[in-house]
Image 1: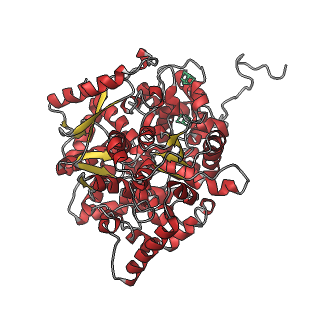
Image 2: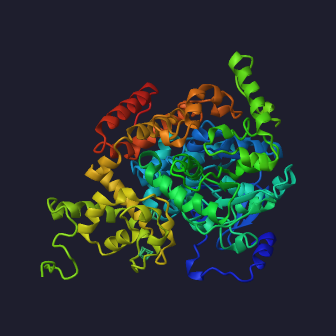
Image 3: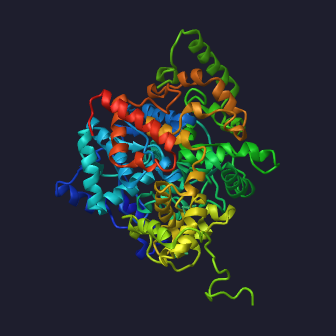
Length: 395
Length: 239
Ligand code: SF4
Ligand code: SF4
């Protein structure tokens, strides 16, 4: 165990997890399979931050040179989400690879319609991991579901030789090697690891901004041992992802009684049974937050959660329910605090619940920003410029 | 004593219903669930404590309970498990809050396996749950990304507010206003390389994932099979 993690864990005074619930460290099996010549483990480079996980196993988070495993829901419907992650990396000077040789994890299909199977899911995961390995960049997973699902896939591959044989055969047809990264890392873990650097680059006073956090089920409930827990955040009893960054940014982190509840996304439900999603997202999450914490914003770290919590509020308002809390990822919130443009970078016009009062409280002139964005759109429309570029966003 | 039946624990003579389906057929399906390599890792017996129900979002709004799923599976109650495959499993949100189980069970995972069998076998529940879902299956299998910007249509999502209309009306322009070079697409979330899609087709065909949808949606299966085989043939890729 590294010194840094030992110091962090030594601060745990009052809270110990029951030993019989501890999950085993998967690294041993992973490296044993590598030694047996069964697979390649893509190593984290020397430039990493050590972070503590739920049962104290340290996790290495590589700082730069990352391969961005994008999320179909983020890129498709909340594009300011992925754009903000890239923007923060550029702003802090970390290089990255935004690949075209990447499919989604396809787990939305697996969890929503069950029109896939174990071998297909494992082959999709390992095809993406092999694609990352070939570039030399280390994978960083944007979606909470991809992250959770890939951890499930890793467990299955480590424990089922028949599955490994099946997937090896498929990958052989693709000319790909069997690669599993040393750590499966979610972007919110990278933000947590870099939180002090991000906070040092924040230009806004967020002390008056009240924030609630919705932790994504697939981040910390699926294969729970990998998720980050920190004694300085919620006394180590709740995952520190998102909340740790909120604290570092100096915003007012507020609790509410249904913190551990799901968002109601449901995979299938958000598309074809939205009455369920809407009821759960608003009655169990947004209204409870509103009554107990009255937040200016709810931050979360997964595609589905942003969608379910944000989009469910419009129709609920028609029933005079106590809703109206803007929803975004902590990546967008952190980018805003570092001076990112609310529309060119954070792309808030793709969101439904009104975010303008939040921007006002953060000291951001949204009318001016919208006018600037309109000017950009005019240039794109006239053909003077084809695409908005990073140069237009100052990074 | 009208409610006294042959079985002292059950109030109805035929509590699980589906009497028209022969027991052997039900058993054949449940045997497939139990034979799945994930099943033994998802179920270690059940205390019937109900902790999973307390955590379960679907249990709050549906007549649904992960405890019943775990209980029936732990007892290998063929009749009840079949009933759940026809009536319960599609209510689950697949959030995995039920992993809080003190016994280490994963009722949501048991449901994943039950759903796969229901799809593969073309059970009525799978067909009706996936009604209106063809487009999504088509998208993910043919493009490698599930959610595309052009799915944001006001007639599909009237309950999501007027912003959906703004997005759909300005879609091409707003996509060009995204700084990441991979994001300028409208029919996929990002630009996926052609060679990557071909590799995905090989995966769907080689692992039997495409075959899984034959029973539940013959039309979409046929279209996808044609697309995949044609593209692979063009590229000279043999399976
Ligand atoms: S995975 Fe399904 S059964 Fe488990 S808690 Fe979530 S909705 Fe309930
Ligand atoms: S599955 Fe687990 S949590 Fe649910 S009733 Fe059984 S023992 Fe309790």
